[in-house]
Length: 595
Image 1: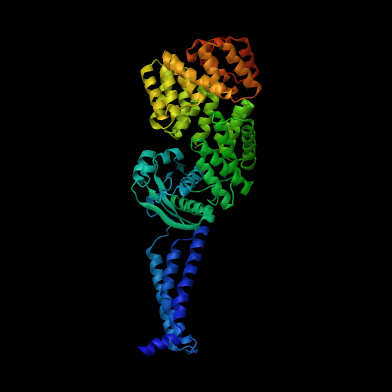
Image 2: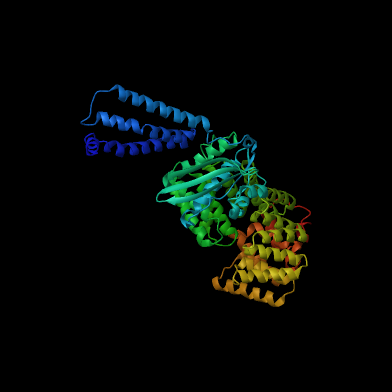
């Protein structure tokens, strides 16, 4: 025994036992790299592993005969052993190859008939807040890429993400979303490595079409996404417009750090809190600094700023200027991006008052991304704002068709009906919005106004009481003005006076206030000249109130002040000077605007 151990030591067998596993590991990593990046058969990795095990005896025999004190001449027994283990390796690899199918191809013939897919947000098993933006961002990128393909129908982001809790039940998801396949996965961060376990499942029978565990450094996030895209392409047997090599046909980047910043920023601006939106804007600006030619962050910056101003979260000339620059940059850098054109349409509508240019930009966005609800419901908002409710309802219903529970789509339906004077249909749409999105304070308020206009004051007051409790009785001036309108319509004098005092106090506190809220308040008070003064100042300062000024003279509000302003000469002259598109006759307008 001692002689054998000494012989092993003299021949330095330990060198092979240490070096061989290391060399094998490097070889396996290289094979995995080529599989992931060049769409090679995933069986190559397993075949290489089998070969490495089979050739270990060959390495040991070579070390035994050719160690430092061993024989240097080749012997017949040695050559015979090499031949035997080579044949063994070939036989094992051949058996494995013939007994398994290509991993990237469907496991069943039925998978070839898959024509629709839902991409679920990736699970975050570690509940790591630092990677949640990746879990949602990668899934959204895949949805956007798939939506650009004609060969497959993809469920919208909001519809898929709404079923986050059922993300591991593919058959349930398939039934609820009406899709044939579901992409599921989970994401974890281990040190500087991102680990994704993803699978494509046939939602009709629960069988797996494709599945893989991918691990890449954080700096190679882009390649992880592209690997998944290539696997989906093979698994669904679809023909793609960009060969799956890039998730964005335009406005993309090859800078991993810029892309990570973009994903983080895009995730943060989806929130409703001003702090989160501001943090998201910082990340998006950082993405642009890393890659000034990356178009998508510009589109997100423009959209986030427009929404901040639109919902009265923040207003300033600087924000308007940055939003306009970002929108124009987005279109220049990403001319095929629907998001870029949607953002530019908002700039034209709310800040430049260029109605024709806004309409053209919305039409372009829809043409570029016809399967997304976003350009439809944004266009619908523009159309009801300019009193063209028939077309507004068409766009809003198309958005709901694409995503039946999308918050903004339901809102667009409700307001389109409201402006058209169909209070019952408006209340029904706002009721659906409130039912699906009970966390939205505005869903309660606009539902309550529609109910009040429809004479259902008991339910309206119950909804307003609920939202006050939910928000700890805090509200922006604009939301308070909408609630005051419901109180006024329902003859709730004490509650109206309470809202009135709050609005006056907010105005006194900063001396400016929200111009839209103040116009509504003055009209409810019957102070027509003060309302007209505010509108005149808004036009002179090019305030975002301007696109809304036609709405205040509509008969739909059922309050005398709103009717009376339509007969004011100054107001009529200002409206005519803005050269709004011709409104529809079905809109219940004041006498001066229909004469």
